[in-house]
Image (cartoon, rainbow, N blue to C red; front, side, top):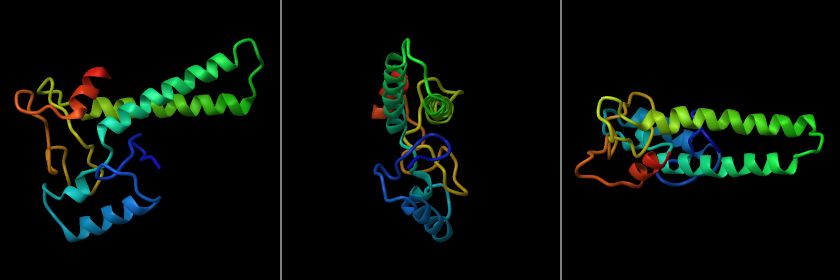
Length: 142
């Protein structure tokens, strides 16, 4: 599954389809406040970044396979869907996890639960002097 923002994963794992939404709704009703990690820990930025790398390979394979060959409309729609997802993931899952007011500060997880902010959750914003999470390297690579 993937979220509308382009990201996927819930609390660092993939759950069965519908499992993440059930947990988000249940925890949002039960737990309140900025440290509600179940409503906060969605769309791990590294997963989004690496899925973007994979989709880039898929777009290149598609282009190489269709070089000089008439392309079916379904194949073009498939390529267009990949490009559209990539753009969504870039803006929401990579650029959206960077803190504009503090260069180098990024989010480990993009919050999608109700009533939470980017600064909440177990991790919140990284500190460029004291953290080195995997998402910091992914953000720099992206």
